[in-house]
Image: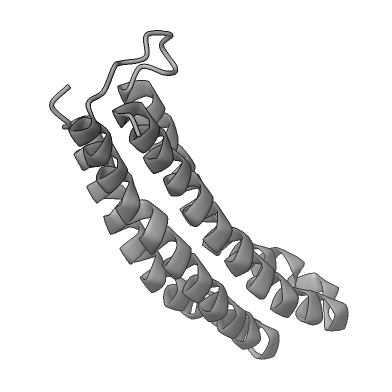
Length: 156
């Protein structure tokens, strides 16, 4: 395989894995949110915010994918001719957000579902409940930073 194929695989994995995690996480939280809204429609806005939290990892993966495509010249119209080693560097640079995005979005969905349960019983505790899924977000942000720093500082 050429270096360009590895680089494109890296961009694709950042988007696909993080996006899959977000879809799963948002689905898990959405199931909990649906139950709450069925019982009390006035809580819709609060539970919707909780449901959306696991969706950020997909956005992070998409961001790294775009940065990667730009770095290798695909978006600028001048695709670089990458060596196999350079392509593997790009692939490795994209993996943190792909893998961490997949896993953290899943667990953020589960944590959001639990937080939605708090809001269902005690809506005044919304601020405190938000902290639980927000803690999971921290690790997705760290992976995002590593991937962005790695991709943007590649030596080509």
